[in-house]
Amino acid sequence: MEWWQSLVAVAGGLLVVWLLLLLLLWRSRQLALREALRLLPDVVRLIRRLAADRSLPRGLRMRLWLLLAYLLSPIDLVPDVVPVLGYADDVVVVAWALRSVVRRAGDDALVRHWPGEPAGLTVVRRLAGLTENHPGRD
Image (tube, rainbow, N blue to C red):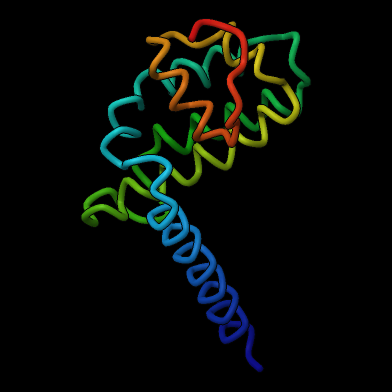
């Protein structure tokens, strides 16, 4: 098999996995795309604040800076001009990253750095995979 055929096979496999993740997000209906897009400015501020928090592990902060770079970059896995899926890929990436961050940093870090309304924090907790009611601002 030629090197380019291997590359095409890997890219195709990644595309299939990505589409499955988008489908799971859509089917779970835990978070409406419109709701997630409305929270995007607060989530970007949250990520920036968490990334600047020196009390968090360095690797975690680096992951957050890379997430910010991805969100602010005009280059996406699925271009934003593609209806629905263009923004859904950003939601999937943010959800994945937030789940990872919450596992390491904890809910207290979310509460401490959340810049928005308590209702928005509830949505972000749901996005991060936190289902129980945690003490904090809500």
